[in-house]
Length: 239
Image (cartoon, rainbow, N blue to C red; front, side):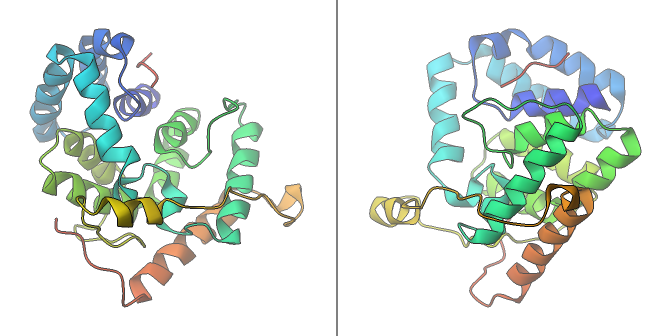
């Protein structure tokens, strides 16, 4: 389980030549661990072969276009729940504390809700606890899967595997409605965000997995109740 989470974290990270070189190792890990359903493996392996053979600059350009230029495909989980509200700041502070309690050190430029980093954290947990934690953003994982499928990208196979491990519902939504990818002015306006502020919150001792889960559940419930939400249309190497 731990190796599978690290492998999937690697595949959702910014592509590098080192990552390309690790594709065969990642494929072996996914096959050996048996966490991902067997019918999903051929599609994932085809994506791994595509990444291994592609020009690294093309891979990096595609990654940025998908995940950095579109809020609806953001790999920052709390973006889909809290946006830039104060709730997001407190949720991220809680998540940082949770990481520290399990010995996970973040890079200075990392945000804790980045999905690959969250997967690295899950790799440190016992299997049952890791699965339980992954179910909390399950709806977001399914929404990302559907939106990646609509863009006909192999990253969909990786996100679909995560959504299935999380037992995500077949139809889900994030709090971020779809945008027109050609409307650059609207996209730029959407990304004019204030810096995340870690304001005063509850005592550190109150920070933990349960409060984090409650925040994710509350955010997803608000998204389902928001009439403006539209239903989607359907780097680390593995150790």
